[in-house]
Amino acid sequence: MSILLTRPGKHSLIVETPVMPAAGTFGFGEQYRSLIDVDKLGALVTNPVTYTPWSPATGTRVVPLDAGMLVHTGLPNPGLSKVLAKHRSTWERLPVPIIVHIVSTTEDEVRRCVHKLEEEETVDGVELGLNDDTSIGDAQAAVRAAADNADKPILVRLPFGSTIELAQAAADAGAGGLVVCAPPRGTARDSGGRLVSGRLYGPFIKPLVLRLVGQIARRVDVPVIGSGGIHSPQDARDYLEAGAVAVQIDSVTWIEPSLLETVARDLGGLVITQPTGALPDEWHPGMGETERRKRAADDTTQKDNQR
Image (cartoon, rainbow, N blue to C red; front, side, top):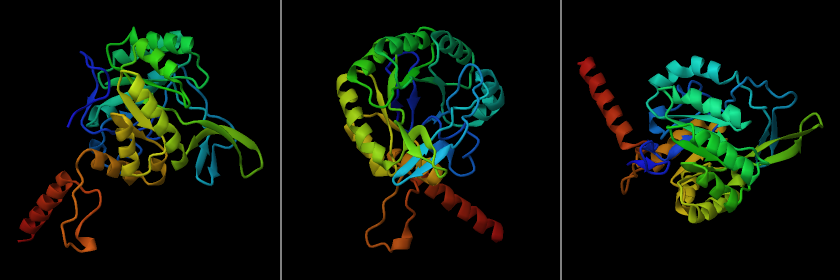
């Protein structure tokens, strides 16, 4: 099946599976290649990138919580030019579309990022992450700076708790699709007793974001991608039922990378069902028809070689 992630048009972004990693959880494509079949994903969304280098945050980076975690990294990256130089060859080999997530800083830097990404044949789309405290006017200016300088499709990731008005403003400014939304921010005490601020991840985020996805999908006429608290195929399906065309999966990838592939197989129609009357060990959860045929072919080849 084909899923339209952005508005129809000459430069629409189309994927075959409605599942992809969220920005900041999958690196730039190399880290998880040995753990999952990347070709089962719909696309790859990179870690956040800025036009100039950003240094990592100091102090505690991760604070465990009862139902998730707080993460504070500072979005370290060497700047867009070095990211492209380092990862271009990897993206050329990956079998899925590459969406580069850029951080909304100044309008000029957004414009420069988009200009540079327009020249990259390995990049299929741009995701612009808006600041948590952005105003409607600032959001429109940032999105317009990206959309007016791009032929490639532009996704816009909204802040947690965004209003319908902010979502509509981003759409009116040229967003081809909306990602709902960035993880919320919070504060927690680390093991050393210090209060640390950062982004919150965990299953408890899902009900909050699911409601927002439904509201925006009903009111704003652009494709919506749901993101937040997805820890099972059913979680992902709930977002689709609420009106999302696709989902982005975040923190569960750090805990159980294979679950990202399992969800992608499930929503991509690659999951086989257990035959009636079968014993519990007669099937493999998450194994799709493509994988089943591949394993059968490998078994046949192995038997032929043994003869």
